[in-house]
Length: 370
Ligand code: IPM
Ligand code: MG
Image (cartoon, rainbow, N blue to C red; front, side):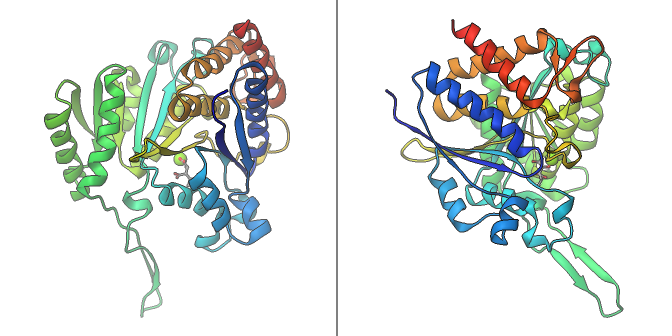
């Protein structure tokens, strides 16, 4: 029996608990059908944590996250908490996890499943077969830069400041992750910034180029301005293999990339820290979609992004490639078979609930595992 894998599950708000329920189903399946055992703890994050503890994440939950081999997160936020002061907002829980765990590399693959090639708002030939990876810097840039804040000015007006800031090590370490990933895929990296208007973009471009020239000369590197990248993503997304970019541009470009796949409900992500001396790497896995408060609690949410995030967890944190493949293949088969949650519903297909989709996935896994 392999050692227990320590998982911390933080379902969060909105549809988070529903979609995470389907991950539980897959974990149960794995414990029954594979030799995998997980030591699963569950905690509160976001508005759910605020309602109970008055903070979007407690120090205890943070400590559990640091101890876990992997954290699985649903989603945070919602209208109920919109008027809270900044420091109490649900999103701060997620941002603290990312920052305190130093999860600097956020991997957001955008893959178009064949069965959904006509579900995108873009023409089918533009997106069929798409398989790109956005590597977003996650612990720096304008999300965390100082100074920040809103101040009252003597004339009665107000002034707000955020700071975009990057250091060479911050750029270099995320660039390395992108080059390493590219080496296992299409061997191409496109680095994205706004060096035409921002000094942080100039440094970004120079440092990525340096890492390339000294360590990864065998990988093809190009540079692109972020506005152009947004346009190219909807014009001809298949030109990209791996995109590496900063925190804010990565946030925006990954939402764009998500819609190429038909729905935000399809996009998983992995947020990884550095590998330490003992080979351990902190990691958090979450769907790219938000809490979708309008459909929360109705059984309408698409669990696939969260299930595919769990597959990434098996792959990147536990070296369980075969099991990750199993989940991904099951998702493909279920879609091929015509099941659809509301967000990806198409004419002639069968519209199913969150839990029926989850059941269908473990049903396929049963068949695949024989
Ligand atoms: C994301 C989200 C978060 C972000 C929010 C919820 C803080 O949009 O993960 O893309 O802006 O990073
Ligand atoms: Mg976002």
